[in-house]
Amino acid sequence: MLEFLVLGSAESNLLAARNQMALTLGYHIIIACFGVAFPAMIFAAHRRGIRNDDPVAMELARRWSKVAAVLFAIGAVTGTVLSFEMGLLWPGLMSTYGDVMGLAFALEGISFFVEAIFIGIYLYGWDRIPTRAHSLMLVPIMLAGASGTFFVLSVNAWMNAPTGFDLVDGQVTNVDPLAAIFNSAVALQYLHMFFAAYMVVGFCVAGVYAKGILAGRNDRYHRLGLAIPLVFACVLTPIQPLVGHFAGQRLADEQPIKLAAIEGLAETEEQVPTILGGYYDGERIVGGIEVPLPGLGSFLATNSFDGELVGLNAVPEGDRPPVNIVRFSFQTMIAIGTALMGLAAWAALLYRRHRSVTDAPWFLRAVVLAGPAAIVALETGWITTEVGRQPWVVHELLRTEDAVTDAGWIWLSLVIIVVVYALVTIGGVRVIRSMTRRWRDGEKHLHSPYGPALPLADPLMNQVER
Image 1: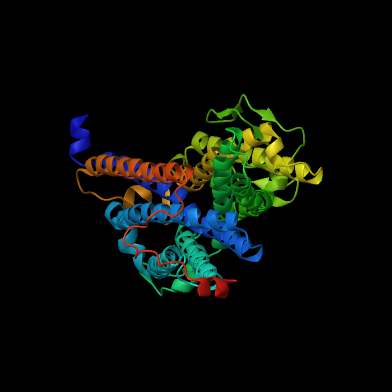
Image 2: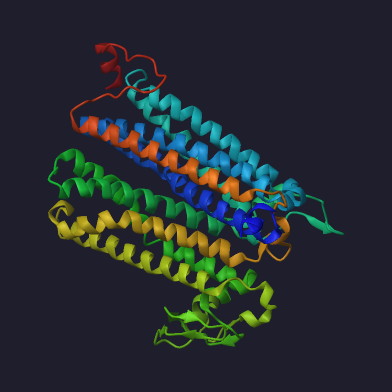
């Protein structure tokens, strides 16, 4: 076993590289969600504070901005690791297709720097910049987060739908980086991830305040802290399945084997049913529950109950993804998404009946659970996307085993990454918990690291701000 790990065999390197990529990508994607969605929620609180002359909303925005800064710092670390991993772990990918993907990575880097600059301005602009102008500093942060996510997602979508180049005798020529960025998969994959980010952040942040209310802190601060992110999450949750539906239809046309793995479909068939649960034994789904609507699987993929879906036997066994992992991940994502839709409908019902959600303890308990559930849905969705493409790192062009590094000691780098990420997590949690404890003890304005001292209150500035 030690020899297998140390000598850097192809099988060992591939396993270690996959585990390291899964860890770093799975970790970073959660933090990245806050970079995408949290600024919009801070903006909503800040603008509410200005419009309604609401000091509670302003205090909420101020506190959230400091939490966002901590999460941004963590995201900077984990995102930098990912950027290096693309070349260190997968040199076969970058050496061949780096010219195709390079522009997207460069534009993502620019987005990152714009986001960092304006986060600094917003964070240190409290009580220094007129309030209305200060709130507008969040706009470029939101735009940079959205654009950066788009460019990163365009690379992943390109791996599922490679385009923008010609391949001549194994050499990439005639590179069109814009065609690569705007590939056939990017629009739906980006929207699916964008809405998922708002769901994750909305339910996670709302869950924090729901837990506080359940603990007896039913003040206006907690009620507003619950309401703002919950509205974002509940409005977008019903839209997400529609985007996912169209993304699934794209699979039927462009990645039929991934769809076959999701469905557990061994042979090419028409009128494919939808089967919930069960496991794939190599020939069929065993132990599942068939939805009593013939051809539902075909309809969801092709808009026809008689539609034909390609089976796994259409390709050699070595070209098939691990079916049970893909299928279980997909169904977990769907089950959680359905439950979150039910939670959004519950919130709408309470609103329609003019009932405060703070008077519904079971609803608040469900909100507390919704945050972790949304994270699980996010992760299983990415497992479906990435594992479902295997054994290809670039769909039908480059195998993952051919892209991995042949350097030794990849397991050592994996161990180092695990230790570093554990320390980053512990440090981040300790900082946020410390901030929360000090706010709860009545401390209003926490000192920002490397920030200038706060100016004395200026009555004239207060008049200008109003």
